[in-house]
Length: 467
Ligand SMILES: *Cc1c(COP(=O)(O)O)cnc(C)c1O
Image (cartoon, rainbow, N blue to C red; front, top):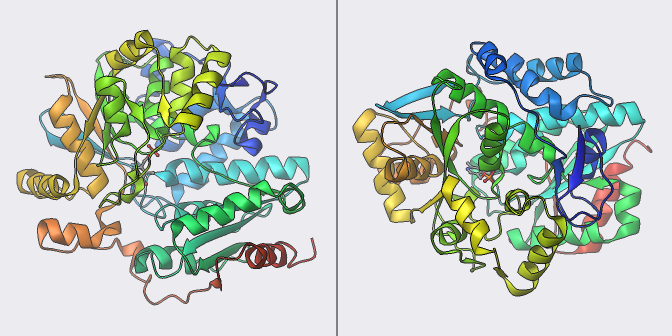
């Protein structure tokens, strides 16, 4: 499979380089040159496979061909999903006659990002090993996503990882999920500032070209195609379980950067009859406004009880825009450039109308999210975390009547104990794999909001074995 950039200026290339590059040099995002399509018979043959095997077969057309062959991919999937505590890996729980929660939170950090990141970490290690090279993954977290990246990279021979978090501003569970990983290739830095300070420090390190190159800095963020590819299989698994490819289904996805819902849309391009994509947001509702009235304008981010969706620009939307513009890269580049400059995206009306035929928007503010958590629990005894509850509310409000709808459950309720307590009056139990979280020793460095000092920490860490 070859990949092209949505902005058309970067040279097409294979999966290995796309994996290591993340973003294309022209500022665009990589997409496959064409969509691999499975026949109805091929889809039916995937029903009932163990999840790891299903995942390897669905990801193979995107990843195999250069240094990764199918046997490697099978091994990465088996290893990655062995660390999940549920034997089904991604169990489907029925909440109502045609409403199902697809639980994506049984991985090592209890969030759906584990599904793709646990694969991505192994792919990085493999490709770097073949190339005889190393990288330092650098990222900032407000608390929720850092642990998934750390868990994916820990103990990988070719990868070091440095994660900055704002000191004292993450929850204790979030901090401990990161700082109790004592692997020698993991560095946690508590920054004496807020999340924006952490992000600015990371950006400044990446824009310092000599530093970036000498430290071989890289990111494994959600614009990396490997992350999208790793999220396609669970949509397929759920759709197959509910009767696809012989029956239509809808999906409802709590959305931030648009990566997860885009993966569902890719599953449709591969031949699954997913007829509707319900995009669920919190009060940061840029996508709902776009789908309602073609108003994609950036607003101030507000903090909510569903922090992983507190986003103003959904980066992966660019991939969908590129497709709906008929893969016209120069039109995509032009629209994105003007969006960057003006904060408002000018999507042609015909394109907007076409997107609206498949995508529905929905948003819920915090008070209604708490009410929704309580009413889901009252109706069927199910504890939905705040992100999941918004997706379920969206499914109820907009799903086509009679069609099975898959609402993705993106985080374990135990990750948001205070909100769950407010909604239900009880604390969710922490899964048994987490029972020692409060007794394990922690390791972390700290630094002021000072670029020179943070760079020095990264340098020392990266050179610790005189590599
Ligand atoms: C990251 C995340 C989301 C948003 O997913 P995107 O792919 O960025 O749209 C939703 N819920 C939770 C719990 C997350 O961690």
